[in-house]
Length: 82
Image 1 (cartoon, rainbow, N blue to C red):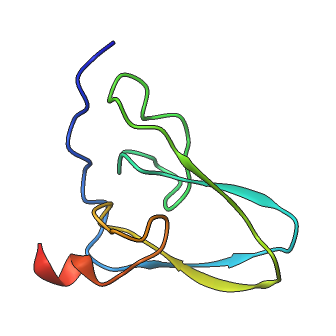
Image 2 (cartoon, rainbow, N blue to C red; image 1 turned 180 degrees about the vertical axis):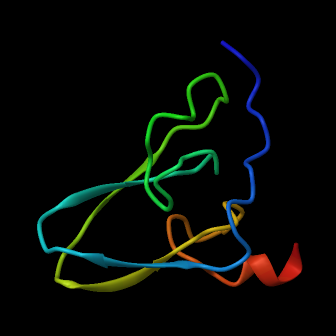
């Protein structure tokens, strides 16, 4: 098993993403996914794993783009400090 790498900053702002009630989403924690803010499997070998989120209602949520949030998978403004 490889050592956990620092996540890549995909962007220094959140991703606004509409979600559907009852659907599961897998937030990219490594920053390497080409389908941000969601996982495409690019984390393999980085030590990171995606975080599952199950939507409770239909709405737009703001997923972290910098991958350094303390409130994963959502933006907490940390991108303003990096």
